[in-house]
Image 1 (tube, rainbow, N blue to C red):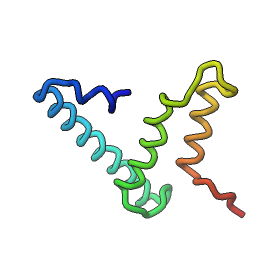
Image 2 (image 1 turned 90 degrees about the horizontal axis):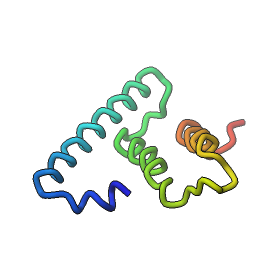
Image 3 (image 1 turned 135 degrees about the horizontal axis):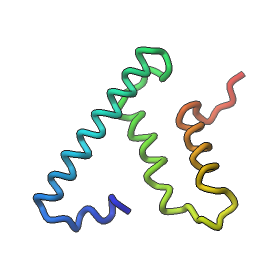
Length: 91
């Protein structure tokens, strides 16, 4: 919803919002890079990894239903597992 509605901000507010977005992206990229150094994360382009993780999280509001088959905590666990471990079964 944030991404759909931020276009309604006044130009100065929109620019400040974009600066904050860039700062947060750089922060998350740094966390990802640190994880690569420690061997916890795969060595892939940090921006792509971060956008992928955030993209999964940011779209949930479009399809999540409180009365659906899974509670939000279970969905968060599933998405977190997919982000951390991928989709493939590891032998």
